[in-house]
Amino acid sequence: MPTAPAEDPQGDTTESPRAGTAVPAGASRVIALLVAAAFVVILNETVMSVALPRLMHEFTIGAATAQWMTTAFMLTMAVVIPVTGYLLTRLPLRTVFTVAMVSFLLGTLLAAVAPTFLVLVAGRVVQAVGTAIMMPLLFTTVLTVVPAHRRGRTMGVISIVIAVAPATGPTIGGIILDALDWRWMFWLMLPIAALSLALGVAMIRNVTETQRVPLDVLSVVLSALGFAGLVFGLSSIGAAAEGDALLPPWIALAVGVAALAAFTWRQAGLRDHALLDVRAFRVPAFSVALGMMVIGMMALFGTLIVLPIYLQEVVGASTRDTGLALLPGGLVMGVMGLVVGRLFDRLGARPLVVPGTVVVAAALWGMTTLTAASPVALLIVWHVLLNAGLSLMFSPLMTAALGALPRRLYSHGSAIMSTLQQVAGAAGTALFITVMTMATIAGASAHTDPVVALMDGIHGALVWGAVISLLAVAGSFLVRSAPAAEESPAPVPQPVDA
Image 1 (cartoon, rainbow, N blue to C red):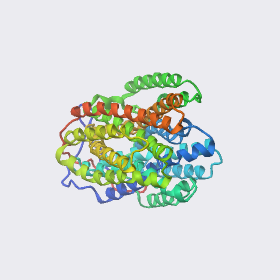
Image 2 (image 1 turned 60 degrees about the vertical axis):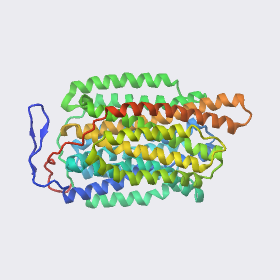
Image 3 (image 1 turned 90 degrees about the vertical axis):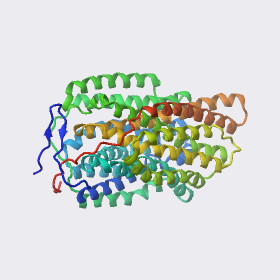
Image 4 (image 1 turned 30 degrees about the horizontal axis):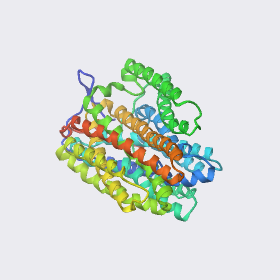
């Protein structure tokens, strides 16, 4: 039986000194499997983005409705992720992993056979349940078993999952769509996910401690209403502009804000038994870095939803060419994820985040110069620069934010970060689509050419994204500069069957 860590007078856990500072061999295997599985499930968040124009024609729906392919995914994640802190505390690692992958498999199968757009969205929702569990599971495992001086490079690898998987999703989707029906995006994913599940069940052992904790049902309800209300409200703004919203967006937003206020108040009262411990926000380094992550995710998902529409509907590129045009940016982000992680271990966050935000802003402002006659090569240049800047931001910000928390808040901090990433992604998608839709409608009254009107809408969306990027530049100077302090790793339980 593992020895429980001692409590300090402030309530934080203190680690027993250990001679070694390397990652335990068994834990390294667990992390590798979790990273591979997480890449598979996160990839599905954007793999369908290049299929939006085809789905719009096939199901006779507008862009604001089609965006629910991505938005429903993010909405579900925002609802489920807050519960993962409880799951990771209560259940063994392998059990949580199995639940996540089985849910993802069932959702993938449902989407593959979906006869209508509504069923397709339902399949995406079931997929998202598994994805929502996977990312906090990965974060918490890394923070528990990886020494502080090695977290930068480990988080660099994880940044590939967080950023590169959604960035390369359009490329993979475009290649598949060029030769096969959109359903094959799911059929081809099934055996890969099944293999990940089989390997995980066979090889993963428990490297985290579990304890019996009560589940506050009211907190779950308030959390679901709050985060779902925000994501649904933000995503309905574009549909409202087209006159196709289920209800006025302000109603969902008001419900979301009120529920989140009640949720926050209740969590503060529950303290150590909170579903999502909001005391993490009392750590300034965590709050600042989290705010920067929100801006970065808005830029990433906003451009991922708009650029395929620009390439296919304005430039006239095929789905394959659209995917290939977005591939260099994804590859750059993958390569830089490893390099930036090592640089963080030496330099800390601020020396990387400041130039990263400047590059992101420059790339987004550069995209505002795109026209219907612009060469695709110019878009590729701006997209590569955008992903390079985001690479300099994501890994350092994730590591700085979570590393600043006491150990008892690791699972809560990772759940908060993962939840707000989805809210930010939904906000970025909603902002870009809403501005694009409204500007297109306005442009249609001034132009007879619908392509010119659509280009006006895309330009307006990119301008808004560029303006928001300036907030990131200003905030980057507030990010904590120093690398994570050296500490001994927590006592790791002996690997046992879950």
